[in-house]
Length: 382
Image (cartoon, rainbow, N blue to C red; front, side):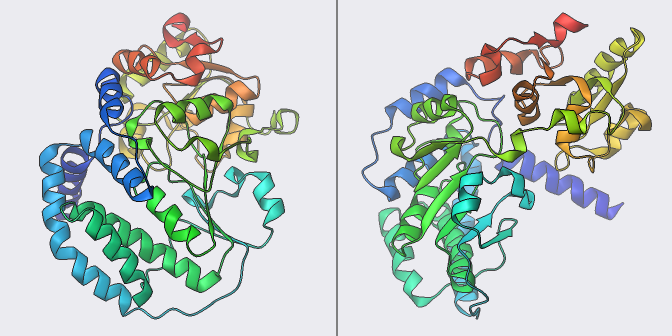
C-alpha cells in the first residue's frame, strides 16, 4: 500500500505540477502569437534559450520557479560529482546513437552506410565532466545567470556527451531530441570538437512550440511536409535531410498472415479515454468485426487496459509494429506514427474524432499531416 501511495504521489507531481502541455492540449493561436513575438536568435545560445522560453510558456509558471530554485542548489553538487568521475577510452566508433529504445530501424540507411562502426544506446551510458568543460558551462551561465534550471539542463547534457566523446571518440553523435531546449547549444559543443550533431525523426510531429528554434548539423525528417512545419517553428532552415527510415517501410507480402488478420486495431497512446475506446470497439464488435487494442509500451496503464478489454483483444507489445500493421485491415488512433506507417503502406487508417473530439480539432489546427490525406474518421465507421 505504501509503495502504491508513493507511486500515486510521484505521478501526481510529475503529471500535474512539472509537466508541459501535451500537443493536443495547447492553444494553437496563443502559441503562434507567442513564437512570433520572439526576436530572431543570433547564435546557438540564444536559439536554445528561445526554445526554453517556448517550453516555459506551456508549463505552469510556479513549476518553473520551483525548478529554478532547486537548480541553484543542485548545480554545484552535480558538477563536482561529474568532475570526480573517471572514464577512459573504450573503443573508437564512427557514430554514437543515443536514441529511444535502441531502435536501429529508425536510423536512416545513408547514415549506416557512411558510418558503419557504431555504438547504439538508450539516452546515455554514463556521466562525466572534464575541467575544459567548465569554461563552456560558464559561458552558458554568463549568458543566462537568472535561469538556473536552463543552465542545469545543459550541464546534464554536457556530462552525457562528454562521456560519449571520451569513451568512443565518434565522428558523429546522433540523437532524437528536437524537443530538447539544449539541442542548439549541444550542436555548438559538438562542432567545436569537430563532431557532427545529428537529429533523426522518430515520431509524429505537429505544430508544437516545444519543438521550436533548434539547430543541428543535420536533421533527418520523413517528408518535405515536416521541413515546412519546422520552418514555421523557426528551426534553422538549411539543415534538413528528407529520408524515410526502415521503420516506416513494411514488407506487406512477407508479413501478412504471420498473425491473425484483425478488422479494426486501436493504437492506444494515453489512459484517460480507455472506457470510450472500449465502447467504440464494442460497437464494431457487435457488427461482426474482429477488434484488438495495442497498448503503448511506455505510457499505457496495463491495469486499466486489462480491466476494460478481454485478454484475447489485447495485442502483445512483443509483436513487431510492422507485423501488427501488416495484419490489420484498419488502424485507429488520434495521432500516431503507426497511422503514418499504415498510410505509407496502403493500410486503411482511421482518426478517432469520437473519444477525442476537442483533441481532434486541435490536431487539425496544428496541421497534422494525415488530416489532409484521404482518410476516415471513427465517427464515419461507427
